[in-house]
Image (cartoon, rainbow, N blue to C red):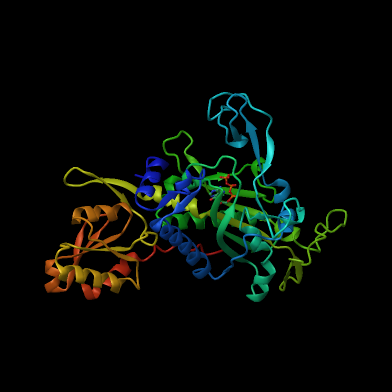
Length: 464
Ligand code: ATP
C-alpha cells in the first residue's frame, strides 16, 4: 500500500527531517525545499546507487561533472535560447497564469472559468550575469543550465579520446539543473532548482535506435524495481510526435503514480529519448546545412567520430535516459510508505525503504538508559559499526517509542542492548518489516547486518 497522496509524504518529510520548506524564516520561497539530515542521505543514496549501477557495474559508461554555467553559445546552438519555452495562458477571470499544456478540460485550476488569453511562449532558462558589468551589458548574460546533457555533449571528444572509448559508450552526469517553471508545485515534483541524473549513450547512425530506446526503458524499469518501486505504479508513455522536443525522434516517458487519489494519477518520473545526432552536429564547426553553409560558425571543434572498422567519420546518435533525483526520491518515499497495526491496536507508519536507500542502516538502542554498562556497550557498538554502515545511537524514549521512530524513517534494523547482553555478548536485532527479532553475537553483528543490507542486484540485459 503506497502513500495515499503526496501530502502524507510532505508531513512525514517535515516531521522527521527529510525535507523542509526553504527560507521559512522569511515566509518561504514558493516551491523551494531544503533537504534535512535524513533527506540528504536518501538523495545521496539514490545518486550513489545510480552511479554504481551505470558507471561501475557496466563496462561501457564513463562519468563526468561539468560546469553549471556554460558559454552562452552552448545554449544558442543547442536550440534552448530559441525553443526552451513553456506556453503560457492567463485566465481572464481570476488573472491566474498557467502552462497551457497542463490545463485539464479547458478549465482554470483556480476559478474554474474557461476564458483564456492566447498562448504565448516563455523561455524557462534562468538568467544570470557574469562579472562586474553594467546591468545592461548584453555580453554578460549567462544561463544556469536547464539540463546537464549539454555539458556532456561539449565534452564528448575529451572523454572519448582520453578514455580511448569506441562506440557504443555512454557518459553519465549527475547535478543541479534550473528551470524558471511557470507553475512549480506538488512538493519536490516540480521545482525551479532540481537535480538530474542524465546519461548520453553514443551509438552509430546505423544502430537500431528505437530498439535501444526500448532497451534503456527496460533497464530503468529494472533499476526502479531494485529501488523498491513497484512496477504497477509505473506506466510507459510513448510521447506522440507533436509533443516531441526539437531534438528527439522518439521519447518514452516512465511515469509514476504520484497522484493515486486523482483520476489522472500519472506524472513523469523520467524520459528516454533518441536525440539523434542533433547535439553533436550542432556544436561542430564542420557540419554544413543543405545549402553547404556551416551551421555553427562559432565552434572551434568538430565533434565527429572516426569509426575504424568501417573507416567512416560521422556524428554519433544519442539515446538519453534523463531522470530526476528529486522525483525518484519522491516515488521511492511514496512506494515505501505503509501503515501497520500493532498488538495494542495502534497504527504505525513504516517506510519500507530498500536497505541501500535507507538514511540510517541500524539504530543502536539501550534497553535501560540509567544503566551505565548498557549505555556504554551500546555506544561502543555504534562506534564500531560506523566505519562500515550508517548507525545512530538513541536513548531518548522507551523501547517501543524508539522502534516506532526508526520504522517511520525506514531504518532496516534496530539493535537492542539489554541486561543479558552484558553477560552473553549478544544483542537483539529487530527487522523493520517483519518486527521479528533474533539474537546475534556482537562479534558477528557487522557482518550479519552488511549481508542483509546488500543492494538488490540490477539484472543486465545481455545485448545492446
Ligand atoms: P515535465 O514535462 O514534467 O516538465 P520534462 O519533460 O520537461 O518534464 P525533461 O526535460 O525530460 O523533463 O527532464 C528530465 C527529468 O528531469 C524529468 O523526467 C524529471 O525527473 C526531472 N525534472 C525536469 N524538470 C523538473 C523540475 N522542474 N523539478 C524536478 N524535476 C524535474
